[in-house]
Image (cartoon, rainbow over all chains, first blue to last red; front, top):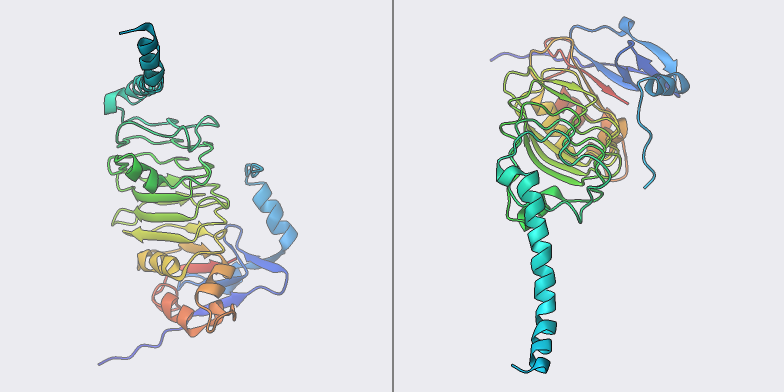
Length: 63
Length: 248
């Protein structure tokens, strides 16, 4: 019989902020084994929305 | 036959003649458009505003080998594609299809059946911009090697509730917009994540996870629950769980 301890590491953005590493975005991020919290920084909601706009979305058609 | 009798017969037959004419035109169009059932290159086949639920009535089963933009920008708002093919007693099969770029992008379809993607290397914008129309994708069958990529595959699918995966997800995948994703859907996604994938990210809606895993009705606390942590811990942990899972 063997036992293992599994640690789930999560980082949480401050209220109104979003975490990113430049590619991934999240309000809560559960880090994989090969990632560290240092790779992520916080941006504002407005900065996040701007980055989405710049990705070139098509406007929703009014239905 | 008297003239009166002939006129009566003509009147009685008018509807039959009209319907026969309509059927003839329907046959003529779809025989050519689907090449008598032999058409397999379906790129842009139902592209654009002219395709609406009332006009989407193929005559033959469809088994695309190529399906880029197959339903792109169609006005099939609210169409249950599974039900429509059942009504027509036809099949829609993607098992031979190698290109799914924009296949169901911005099409309005509410229910998509089984999409076998095993002949394709990527799902680029495949279900993009489903907005509040696309609710159910019965099953996406993926390859077993986790090699397929997902680029903007599920972007802006705010209404998506049910989705299932067979096969392996081995690259970044993003369902951040699907705030109503069900518990079974989220479980299906997590189960499909390739165990030893490195540097990969799954992005989900925090709202969806909070609801799906909530500890009691209305608590909306799922993302902090033991149930959620238990589900993801085999794929995302500091020991050998290499997936990064972000909730947005």
